[in-house]
Amino acid sequence: MNEHQAIDRIEEIKHNVGDPNPWMALYVDSSVPFHPKAKANFLVDVSSWSRQFLMPLIRPFCRLMICLIKILKTFVPNFIKSSWLLHHSIYWGLKWFVSPNANYLVMRHFHIGSELLQFVADNAKNVEMELHPLRPQKLRDLADDVFLQHDLNIYNFIIEMNRQLNEKDIGLEAKGELDFSAISEDFEFDDMPNRWLNFIDLEAAIEIYTPMYQLLLTDSDFWRACHSLQLDETIALYVTTLVKDHRFLGLVNNRHPIIPESCLSAGHRLMLHGLAAESLHAFLVRAKKQAEANTSQPALD
Image (cartoon, rainbow, N blue to C red; front, side, top):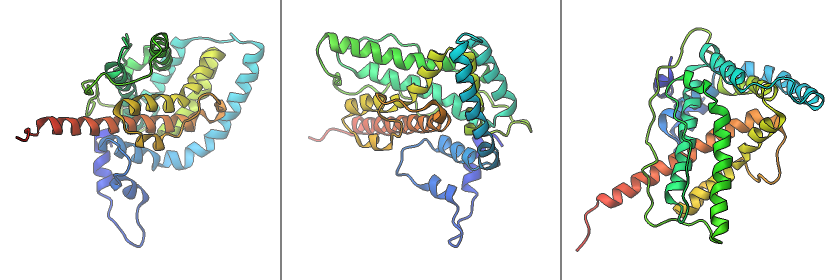
């Protein structure tokens, strides 16, 4: 099965009133904005045997490794430092062992992150931003420091935009009519690997890669990457302020960046980060369609 077949798999589930399927219930529920194909892949991934049985077994070991590496880095801070090795090891791991559903969601995430920042930049009044969009089309593109650059993009965006606003002593507000040109309704990628070894779910893969991330980056880089997850609230506030609709904020789980969370929970928080980004992007897709529908309606005499 590949990422394009996830919808078929979910929709083939027969409803049994005596034994309702939880994944079917979550798929048909429309209370939370979510792209249908992304949602189907998300649900297939979290319902996999890897997520049910493998992930709980490897999580304690991976968290122990984080503690041991932290001790090592305390005494030998630059023991190993290689962004090249980190990104190439992630790429090979995704290619050979991670499920196509999970890889599809990983690829979507970088496009979504770039579009959310571009939307804010396009609509923020009295702000001029130079962005570094990430739009990988195939897994191999991820080896080009994409994971590290994703975190840098978020921090640099927040710092630069607020520097400009603070220098002018103004708050964030929209220029006028919202520009949704940065928001895409869907993304298409090269086919994901789908060999018999490609079975590891997204959260298990994240748990495995987190100690690698810590080992092959500086302590500062690792902490910054973990802490960036709590900026979900910050980016969501920017978007909802521009749209003037704060209902989405209730869906954000990574909150209060001034009070940092432990890096031990980075794996689960990264899943929440991906979910928040997907929902915020889908929220903007809905707003874009509504704006287009309002524009296309003939004016009343």
